Image (cartoon, rainbow, N blue to C red):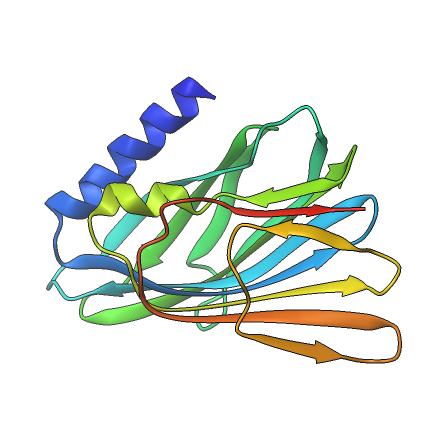
Length: 187
């Protein structure tokens, strides 16, 4: 884990050195069951320079005794199918390649699923603080069956939607610099 954090810091520092490259928005959908936590999201990167960036990113997975194996890792670009992909991944994280054209924006669709061994799920957000700048905009939602009771959330939701069998919690953030991870404790 410590090695992964060091690699991530180096990558994030390169974002600061290349001020023209900005990870400015994310829209994430979390799905919780009693045995899995799934993340499916859109990650928005802006390149304001005159050069194309082939950016290698490290996407860390949370580590805890209550978390099982990660599987179903994917990374695609929704506008240019050949410009984002998973290079390799293991249980600590995924190495991704994202290509951002000059004076353009790239939207990468990234996700994974992690087995849960107990009543806790987590998504790593706190690495954003290394960038020194938060997201211009962030949207998160968490869908879970009514058979699950949420005991604790690291961030209070802005909205609640309900169907006959599911709840959906919604967070909408502007100028958001997360200083802690997204953690859900449940039973």
